[in-house]
Every structure is written in C-alpha cells, then in structure tokens.
Length: 639
Image 1 (cartoon, rainbow, N blue to C red):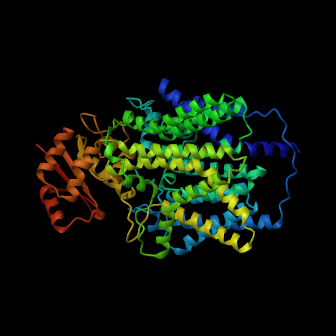
Image 2 (image 1 turned 30 degrees about the vertical axis):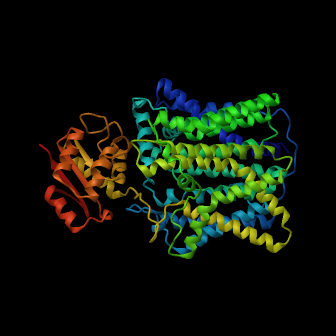
Image 3 (image 1 turned 45 degrees about the vertical axis):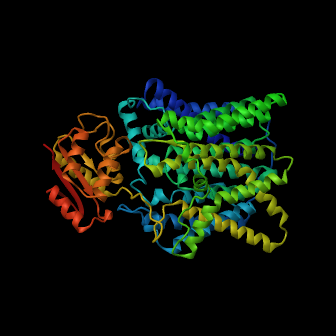
C-alpha cells in the first residue's frame, strides 16, 4: 500500500516537480554565473543540481496522507494497446533515424519523403488521442509518443538544426572553458546553466544536449500535465483536449532548441499547474510558483514577463483582500502586462518607436500564422489552412467555455482575461524597431508574445471542448469530433516543421558536413593571418562550432569574423549584395576596411543559384579559388 500511496503522491505532483526543478535550477545557475562565473568543478555542479531537488521536495512536502486507492489491474487489452503504440513509435524512430541528413537541406520533408511515414505519424496521433480518451495509455508510452512528435528536427538534422543552437552551444562552451563571457549577458542564463551543468557532469557535448533537452523536456511536461489531469476526477474529461489545444497553437517555436522554446514550454506547464492544482493554496505552493515564474524569466525574459504576470494575476484572484484593493491590483498588473514586453525590447535591444506599425495588417498577421494557403496538394493546403486558423479556433472554443460559465471554472476565465491582455501586449510590440535585426525577424517578437496569450486561453478552451463533448450523445457525432481533433493535431504538427514544396520553401538551410570542410579549408589557407569571411548562416554556424566565440581571428574584436547576429553587417551589407547584385572590387575593399583586415573570403554555394555571368564575375574579381566540391570560395587580398 505504501508504494501505491507514494506513486499517487508523485503522480499528483509530477507537473510541479518537473517545472520546479528546471526553474529553480535555472535561478541558481543564473545567480552563480552573474556573481562568481561558472566553475567546471564536478562537485560544485552536483551541488547546483541537488539544490533544486531539495528545495522543490521541501515545498511540496505533504502533511496530509494521500487517500489510498488500489491500483487498477492492467487488462490484456491495456497491455496490447500500449504494445501496439510502442511498435508504431519504434518504427517511426527507426525510419527517421535511417533517413537523417548531413547534407544541405532546409526541411525534414526533404528526407522523410515517404507517405508511409506520414501515415505512421497519423496513426500514432490517432492511437495516442484514443488512449487518452479511453484512459488506456501508459504514462511512459505517452511520453515516447509525444517525444517523437517534438523531435523530428532533432532526428532529421543530427548535426544541429538551425543557427541558434550553434550560438548557444558556443556560449555554453565559453562558460565552461573561460568561466564567463565579457561583458556578462543577462539573457538566457537559465538555459545555459542547465545545459552547462549537464555537460560537465555527463561529458556530453552541449550541442547534443541542447538539441535534445528542449523537445524531451516538452514531452515530459506535456505528459505530466495529462497525467495530473487524468488523476483529477473533475478534469479527467479534458485530458485529450489539452493535447489538441497545445497542437492547435503548435508552431516552429516548439520544434527548435532555443531559450524562447523552453520558456514558453515552461509557461504552458505553469499555466496548467495553476488551474489543475487550484485547491493547493498553501504558502509553500505559492512560493514554489513564484520560483517557477522567476526561473522562466531567467531562461527568457519575454516568456518570464508573461509567467510573472500570470503568477500575480492568479495570486490576486485567490487572495483575501478587499474588492477595491483587488480591482486596483488587477488594473496595475494588466497595465504592466501590456507595456512590459515593449519596454524590455526598447531597453534590451535598443529599439526605437514607430507608431505607424500598429496597423490592421499587423494584427491579421499575428492571428493568421500561415500565409502560404495555396498549396500544390489538397492535403497540404488543408493542413496550412487548419494551422492558419488554429488561433482563431482556440479563441472561439475559449469563448464557448466562457459562455457556459461553469461555477468551478473561475480560474480558467481569469486566465482567459489575462490572455487577452497578453495578446494586446504582443500587438503593441510592433511599434518597436530593432536596428540590428533583419525585418522579417522583428515580427517574431510580437508573434511569440501572441502565442503566450493563446497558451493562457488553453484551460478555458479545453473546458469549452469538454462541454461540447459532454453534450454529444450520438456515437456518430463523437466519432466525427474525434476524427476532426486527430486531423487537426496532425495538420498542426506537419505545418510546425519547415516546409519544402513548390509553394513553401524555408529560407533556412541546415549546416552540413560540407560547411565544416569549408571552414577548415579557409582557416588552413589563411595560415594564421587575420581574415574575414562573407558566407551564409550554415557556414557561420560551423565556424562557431569549430572556433567558438573566443577565437575571432580579427585584430579588433568588435564583431565576429563570420556573419552571425553580433556581426550582422557582414551578412546584410556585404554577403547578400554579393550574392544578389554581384561581386565588385569596391565591395571587397569595403569589407576589408570594415574588418580592418587584408584577407577577404567569399563563399557561394550551389543553392544560391548564381547565374553564369555572376560566376564568371566571381572568378575574375577573386582569381584565388579554393576547391571544396561544387562550392565557390574566392580569396582576395586588399592592399
């Protein structure tokens, strides 16, 4: 019996444990790094990881003995169902692993091309959803299923997906090797501390840990939410709709190993913990919630602002202060929530204001996430339409849940109200213009905040869906609703990953083995002389991975010697004009003077599709050529 009681206690607190340990670890790591720098001592890292467990265990210590409920025996159908789902997941993992790419691709759909693979994923989504609906799925198998859905990029791009993961990898390696980076950055310390700890203790490369930690944590958090929901009798019927609602707002944000991804995943877990544990109003639990919100802020400020606002909003709702004091508190929190992200962008990114950017078009772009609604195939067209309408559908179901006004759903309605304020905040951030960020990246700030507002609406949206399900008694109606839900989850999952077809082409090409060869070839050719390289992001990412931040190869270290965000001028003012407008002696000279070097290299890859005239011009102006396959690498010495 004691084992069963212990298991029930752990399961009922699983969400708080997952959130608390990660958040408190990020807080301690941030404080240590900011005050003392990072130590490679294994003993100190063990202490840093042990403290969060002790703190969370102390705050979750239950004085009341849980009520013993005899565990339900696992029937043959339960075992058969989970065995079948396990086989499906293993088959999908094997196929994806065998087709992983180390060449230049921009989308997993360039290598995972078989329709059978997509049918396999559809079957996994359907079986997982049905298992949640019938309470037949094991928590372990549920985690494996969700982990697969979140790790397609990680599996398909074994060298590391995107550019951000290489920047954070270089930062963490600099932490470990040098103690800190000067000047000390206040951003993202939480994620860096978590990965640095794990890297020192396990010996695994930070790049590998980064690629796997965020999606696996997301799967663990979703599993904990669904397990806690399933164990809460009055919320059991909502469990499958939590999964649906999450995937309705599912975006590329949750498929990349970035601080913003981890911050929003923690935010989603925090929102669910607040309403699932609505009866846990002890001082200890509120202290833990405050730590979770602060830990999210240490991982990413934009997510952290929403988390802190959510904590304050719900704390005021459950407080015993007077009605007038509560109204004043709500107004103060609401006003702060609307303006805080904009202020953070102005201060942190040195942004300027342009009030003309608050247009109806900007609002519709936030609501409609998919601009490429015309697709060559009807199924992909439907998938993009569903993803584009996902936020609208979630909002409508939340409105339906609000209209029902169930007496026990006051917390959900309060979260919905805060979600509206967060959405307004996202729209307001459009006024901020950040000078050193490419134009299409600036809109992502507003979109990230807007997604945070949608996450706050999920509890009420799941309530609306659950009420709708409860009102349908005909078997045919329920089958139709279930089918629509499965199709929606699958469509949202498919569109969340970079597309690659005749209409939708991702702008980001992955770092390949050839990029590492290019970087090594250029460095060997330079023979120790300072130089600058005009190249695209994949090659720059390879340079970061090979050399790190502390080996910049420039006499004046004001920016990196490859085009990365801290040296964006090399990319926007020199490399892109060279690729689109053609190379000129004036451009080469300007690049050399900008970096105060004599040696300039330019890398032009096959996928840039240079014309024959551009190639001839390239070879004429830069006759010193390096041979790396079909890549054009030119070298010029500016006297």
